[in-house]
Image (tube, rainbow, N blue to C red; front, side, top):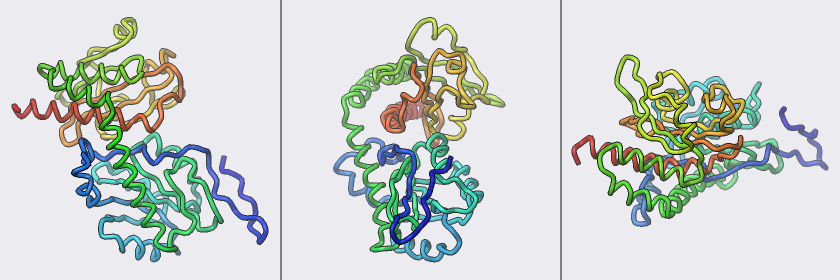
Length: 327
């Protein structure tokens, strides 16, 4: 249900309000994997790919404002339909989604909630010029005065910088360092895959499994490594088709959080064995497979958790690619 909006008048400010949840640390770009303080300045010069969904009367102002920043690579659309088409194009890089809260015939709050599941790495900036002040809700940030003192530009750049810093912090945490050491010691692909599964399990997941891509027409997914309860392990298929939710994650290249009641789902959640799972693709240009980790309680896996898991999966992909090259 869309939040109630009090009528505008001179005594009662209008609020931009949404459900409480927001984090500027729920996204990760593949080029930031392994970033160090020495390369921080290099990452700050990376282009920022933006999709802006705005009302037609505001189009020119958004275009002129975003054009001021040379790092921005911007696509601007004026309807939710056009934005959904752009968001569905997995071949195009996208870092930030700017959305006007007053797009016609669109429940923007519900839309953002859906994007948190389908595009968990996407930074979202909510714009509401008709509000006197606001809270971001499930967006990462909110602006009610986007064109005053270039606030729109400043907020986008700050979100991108916070993401970089979050990745720096995550990359220096002991589990990530320990996994990097385990990868160096592991023999062959199987050892590396098992090391990744074990590292994720140690992060507080009850059951973790990694499936590799088996070539074919269509391709299939083959179980390569798992860790957790033996009874659960015995339930997992050795080979599964490419059309289920795991194949969808591999094809899209986007991580996905799954909770009880979601559709599509995973059979372990449908049968009540677990309440939540997160599936992470392994590899970008070269796709090696998909890792999925489970927890008992629905809603127990947050967007922030994806950063750590993506770092693990990115390191695994790098190690597998190096081995494939004979390095």
